[in-house]
Length: 172
Image (cartoon, rainbow, N blue to C red; front, side, top):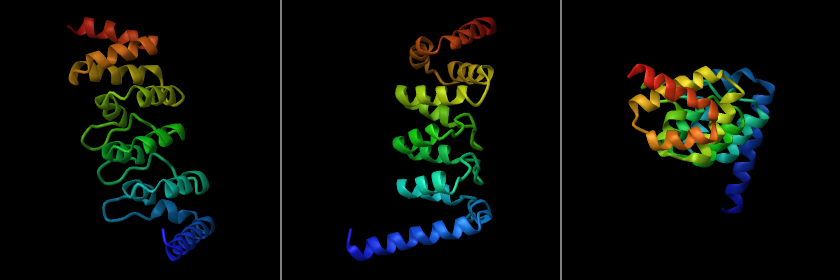
C-alpha cells in the first residue's frame, strides 16, 4: 500500500469513528437501496478491519436484516468468508435466522460440512436459544437436506441431538 493510500484509509477510519461516536443513530438508520447497512457492506468488501470497527467499537447489532432477509452472518456465509463467519459467531451472531429464501447460516455451514465452524455455531446457539430450536433445525436438515453423514458426526459431539433420531423414527 502506498503511503498516501494509508493516510486516506486512516483519515477515513477516524472520520467514520468520530461520526458514529457522536451520532450513533446513523449506524442503525443508514442503508443502501438493498437494505444493507454498513456491516453488510463491510462484509461484502471483505474488510475485516471495518467489520471489527463496526462490531467492537461502534457496537453494531449483528442480526439486522437487509431486504433479502440476510443478516451479517447470512451475508458472510453466502459469500463463503470463513474467518468472518467465525468472528461473527464468536461475537454472538444468531446462526438460525433464515433469509427470505429459507437459508439460515447454520444450514449453509452444514451444507459446507465445516465441522469446526458448525461446532462453534452450535456452541454459540446454546447460549442464545433453546435446545428445542436446535433440534428442530437438525430435524429439518435430516429430512430435507440429505446430510446424514455430517449429522451423524455431529451427534457424537452433541449428545442432546440424539433426540432427533427419535423424532425421525416417529415420523416414518
